[in-house]
Image (cartoon, rainbow, N blue to C red; front, side, top):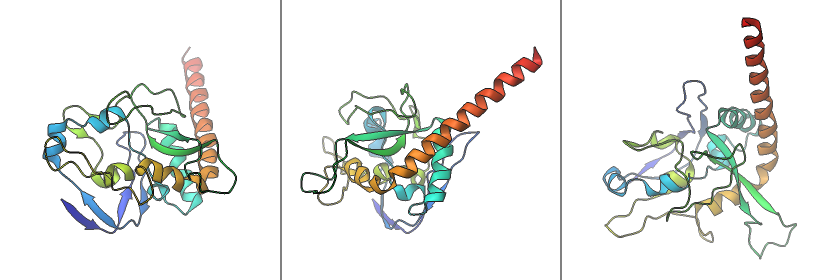
Length: 213
């Protein structure tokens, strides 16, 4: 079922300590089919978290993006992943990238702030941190990554879900990897700031322990 919406608040962290909300004016249909997803059991959520778009974090406002990404990365609920090689394809004649960073929710048992997702819809990865076995995704639909919001559940048993990727792209992750290229500097700044926040918090914790001792 598709419904048209003009504005979404994205993303919202379901966390008692951190709540990051990015306001994005993104027009487009919203696909919801709770019955189908319940029957499927969330295979996509269990194997590979969906990728976010720069607009999910307030693009093109770099200051706004940096602040929200910093808090999200420091919370451990979102991570930096990357597309191997340059996602713009062989027809791109400019300087080629070795990898293209983008942001997604963390996976259970992830390896840190930079964590490559090797899973697929066919398995092989770890569940998204926002996926709950009993109830599915713990995020409100409007707070989910763009890749998750664009996914249209299959309409019949044995069918395939439709990612609704833009023309010329393999899937929405590919689409988002390209969209993030102009904002790689924002990701780097947020990463450094998040590491600083984590280090400062750790030092503060050690000071408290010493005082108690």
